[in-house]
Image (tube, rainbow, N blue to C red; front, side, top):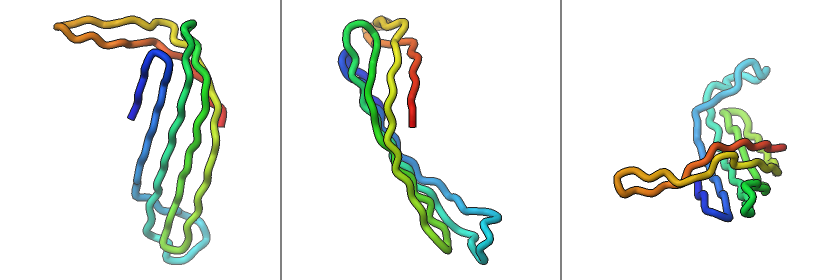
Length: 103
């Protein structure tokens, strides 16, 4: 999900995948899954730059074990082109964006 307003950019992601570890030196470790949550929020002043941070969590669960990790992130970027697109009575804002995120 993404919310992009004049002063705020918020992005949230969630995923669930089938996964398993191969060649991990355990016996009968043939089933598993991974879950992931990520979210970040950025403030945007009038000059086109944005800066903010977020956090992510991931968990890998297999037949024999489970492990997880949490990681914070900071980042920023710039909207180089930010204007309105008008077509058939529908007004949408769009931008060309460059960003850097450090985890």
